[in-house]
Length: 119
Image 1 (cartoon, rainbow, N blue to C red):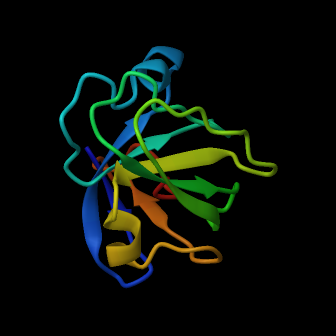
Image 2 (cartoon, rainbow, N blue to C red; image 1 turned 30 degrees about the vertical axis):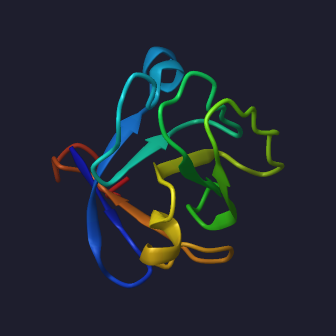
């Protein structure tokens, strides 16, 4: 599992959904998420069939936050221009973590030899 480095310097467990199947599955069928889930590449999400509300942060290529919103179950999000990744967490988490428009997050691989850039 990877790690998400927040603007505050705090780290969290991060799951990465980087295949079509993993992105399609996302958080469906779960009752919560420990840490966050990064969908990549992605520019929109939906919460149809979800059991809980989520916070969604749309990220650009440099992992800078373009916008953050909370989505209740059963919603379909509109694609965001310039979004290349989507970060999902339980509702309320992004505000607690300081993830807001203009902030930048960092992804660190669990295997330091997997990607020299840490992404």
